[in-house]
Length: 187
Image (tube, rainbow, N blue to C red; front, side, top):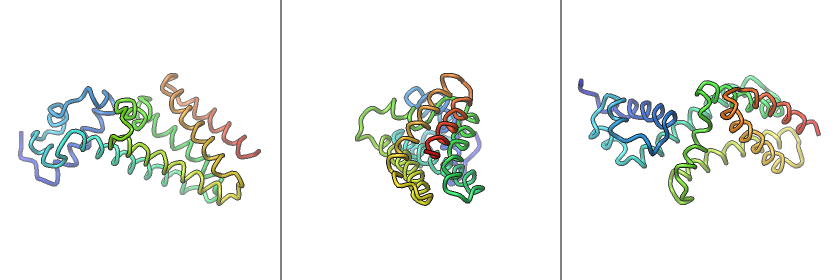
């Protein structure tokens, strides 16, 4: 195995962990497998992350960053807050379709880490709270009086569509969810 520059190992490990954790599940994948897939030594993995737990947190934080980038890119094409809310459904559809309908990585991680005090759960809460906050802010900008409640309801519709898309192995639930969201916004 060729020598990996110190700055390269972190990125390689995160990329490998992202693929493996999402595809196979976090607990199933060991650090030996991640290191081998990344083409680095276990020492390089531990030197960059310290533990598998910290690697999992870094994986989810990176996924959150990439998701936020995707949402920003898709919603930026829409000036009106209402259209930005609906564009989140498009972002979900594109994101989960691309990832092979394995579901939401954050919800998947939650099922593997049942302790609410686990740092993994904190990253998941941050991710979901940020999305809820985005929806609530857009709804408030649109002049919706019940922005908090509607954001709660839209989150349920989004998360339900994410689950159903995995079951169906198809993006259809997101199109249905977007139609439902449109009706909710029109009320």
